[in-house]
Image (cartoon, rainbow, N blue to C red):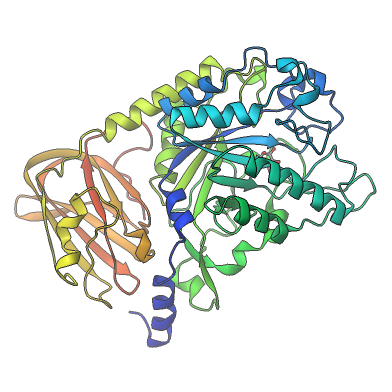
Length: 490
Ligand code: FUL
């Protein structure tokens, strides 16, 4: 039972809502990271900034191939490393010579950012940018105000010349400049430029809109809350937790320190709560950049499916890195794996068995919030019980016996994140049998369990904040792959 003292805090948490840009971002679910720069040609992960631009020469470069590969996996966007820590710019920046304009590629007239942005638009997926504030080439780095001006100028170029940008991705890596001083980043100034030029773009990781999940291994928390303490937006904290040395180990570590960011226990004493949803970023290979030695280390399909179900199916978005090779193409091995991944996902969700289903809830706020809204395919309509009802049940009649092993739940995100725990049961004879037990739902919870055959399903929301909402309930029979079935998520 909630104690009265806590009730206010819980209600306050229930009423925290996402911004329009966060909502649009959440619906993207799965998209690519593309790490590509001089490192691709030097076989390094972190460039030193002294590379000769002449080494950048991807002779078979084809951004349409990147986009085709992304689409084959069901990805809805792509984020390109326009500038990594080496400072080499994939666009002909007016503010530095360390760029494609001094490389032999396309006779010094090339622009990778433009070709990638155009290919995304042609292919109907969104385009985002990664720009490293840490710049090991730029002489003004460490001379804080001067470098900040330089960096904002580069941001302006990227945010004006390449059409709509859905995301600006900042990491917190930060070193000393040539003058021996540590660069103080003007984060607020950077954010201002982004809000002015691309108001619909989310600013991720070292930014106010999207939270880094805390590791680069592909791990999602059991209960991934989008409503968390405001202090998590603190860039310094992210910087400290971000990679400080290129020790080859970082991407394998899972940060377990903050395993609980948003339970009642955590939020009840917190003064300010914010909407700060999680993104899971990891690479399809051990490294972020291409290394021929890793051609046989492309992650197996099962592992990728597990990460997909953990993240997209666990209230987080999935940013999967695909490193193009020296030709400028995504290697055949990676391309093949992504095709398999896309096939496994689309086959699972092809047929929703709720086409002729009907739902009955223990309580419904009003006609507009009818329980049958959960089948209409729209994120805007939803079911909810009367305010203050923290527990409720929905019984679903599939209209005939159906065989299934996957149920997808979605909350009405515009109302906030409310569900804290639930169970799913199916009817067997006269009784109910539990098939899944879960914690949070949020944008989406994909529940996977051993295949059952039944006509009736019961969702019991055992704990929620203020009152739960549900905008979608889908039932599927998926193929194998990914986490073992029958897993109870608590
Ligand atoms: C980290 C960087 O240091 C890595 O090279 C990579 O770009 C990763 C996504 O972020 O902070």
